[in-house]
Image 1 (cartoon, helix red, strand yellow):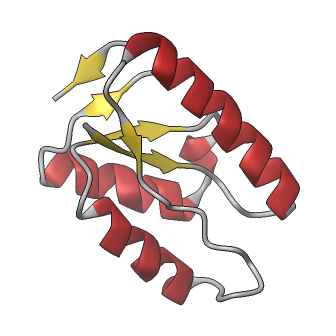
Image 2 (cartoon, rainbow, N blue to C red; image 1 turned 90 degrees about the vertical axis):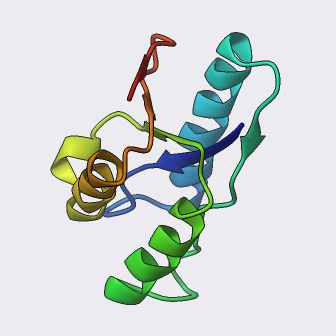
Length: 101
């Protein structure tokens, strides 16, 4: 199963982003044994804003499921990714291990 991690980037260092991501990956491996984490981390110095979001959506298009990092509700990009997941019926994995279709 290919899983996309949606997480807020604003006001966070690259190190903070990677730390949250690693924690989510650890939790995912506790629930799913056969999981591939899609590379959705786009370093801030590579691009910014809409370009960053469009690159993330391209990666999301290959996902079998998506998981949202804490605080996603406050992030415009994460909210857009959540809408895409709902509209395209990409299952949403909650951190407690349940999936929502």
